[in-house]
Picture 1 (cartoon, rainbow, N blue to C red):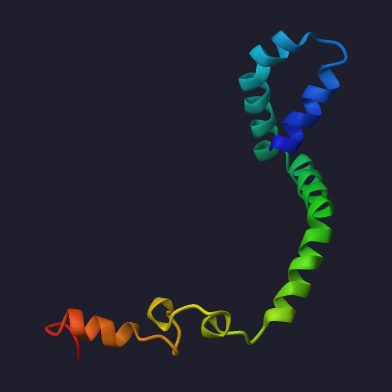
Picture 2 (picture 1 turned 120 degrees about the vertical axis):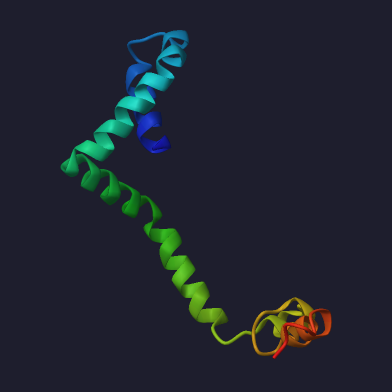
Length: 103
């Protein structure tokens, strides 16, 4: 939404004074929101724009995920006490603290 709002402000800033734009802020956001939810073609355009803007970050994220695949919390120095996977001891801690509920 901020991308749309920023675009509108940039467009209007060439013809409208800044103080007036600040007064219009809520109206612009409301109008853009209603357009986004009511106009399917506009929604698709916005989604495409956002997808393009984040494509490089997504590519970097996918690369990083592949790079760290298989690394367990214990491999990066996280205490087993804090992990929720099989290497952790959460079950033992639970049984110790709640013997009446442990099965």
